[in-house]
Length: 364
Image 1: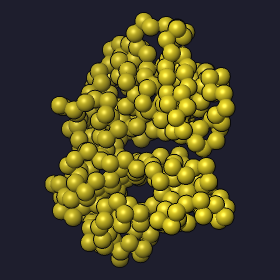
Image 2: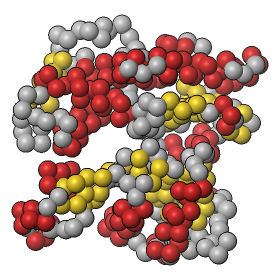
Image 3: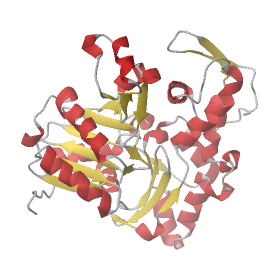
């Protein structure tokens, strides 16, 4: 289950939680703050004296983990969109409610956003946790794609959600999701990070990129500098160098073209030993062509990109270059790249502000 939270006291708090990050803010109408969905515990209790009394804890969450990654065992309680550790999820939610939002969750209705294909087995323990542990008064459940369509007010089209571990392609007609045509590609942002990590090893002598701190560094480099090539710049042009200062103030330099090469795994999965037919453009074209001609144009002219990896610069331009007769739509008056990761958030905000949810209580 990939899910999000919109906590609403008549439109005042929203949270969304994904595999790698938590989005939260005390006002749904504003952009969310982002917190890493990660939990860390000291590897050895003897290492706790290394911290002063004010920082000494048994559990560290989010950005606090990265500062101490060398002495913590780090875990992500959500993998591939599925909650794998409800105890850790309890800790993270408590941190969000109390430390970040400073609110009493028992006084706020809660909107949960889930993927359309999420199973009920994972949903039930989450609801039990929210009702029993946090005493949420009422909860509403909506699909992620419903929130996205609500934000963009589109009746026919295709949603492409590019997350950390996978990509989903879902067509919808007359606002109804055609789940039989849903495609899941096992390629996402983490694959781009892994490819970049392997390429950088030749330029980072003395830095263990396979350690958690090294992986975090590569991910940050990707998020800050990676982009998708859509012009005529050759990918093998390694004359220009990119410079990066590590957290311990070491400078590393590497060919800047690695920052575009790594993104090619979306369009050429064979780079990672995967089937070439799993490329984003091939799967999208197959989806469009599976419909009669009178439907194809409606779908191809309303392509919606969402998810954290969809924020990579150049993605929409590259898709248009690959398939030509398609149109990517974005929220009006919004920066297309930064908002690609927030479409579900904005849709949830619109629904919560209008109070159009159907709520249910614990006894139901």
